[in-house]
Length: 205
Image 1: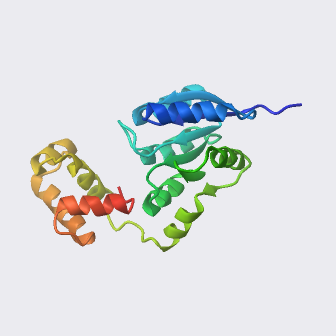
Image 2: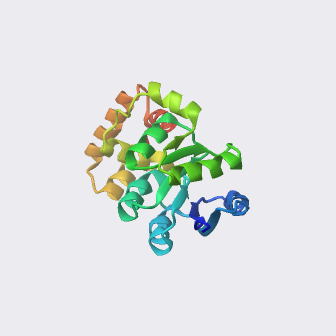
Image 3: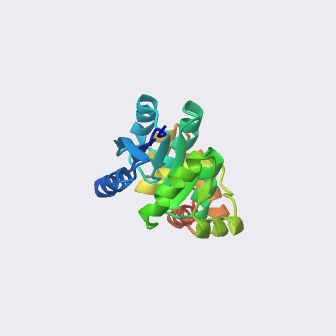
């Protein structure tokens, strides 16, 4: 008896990339596409509705970061294996993704054959990580930022003022300044723009 194909959902905001992945994976006889979403804030509801075997998840998604979705999907649908497929091959992102419950982490410039093989391996119970990134992650330091420092620093990404961040997070301006100052100190930078750059580069946000 032929086994049922692995049911795959893709969460990817770039339409061309999403379509290409879908078409190429559909050529594999043991894989089938059951859903596509372009926004991070649509992923959880789509997984709940479709219940895929594997979710291919980008990190940089509008509405909600892929890194913040992994744990919720893992808790809601334990049978759904999450594989992060991203342009941002950063050790910090890898660490956060695996700690949240991802079963795989690959970069987008990998050949489609490697992605298809990773899907099969993950479904058989393995964990699949880009080998170069795995080596980098072994020597990478974990984030020194607290959750609140990370949140405040992230809110400054669009050029928001202290007053803007204060309103968004319901914190006093002095508290926001304290968190930003602490983040700048921990990243050994001179200002919040530099701190944001370092934190992003190391996958701490």
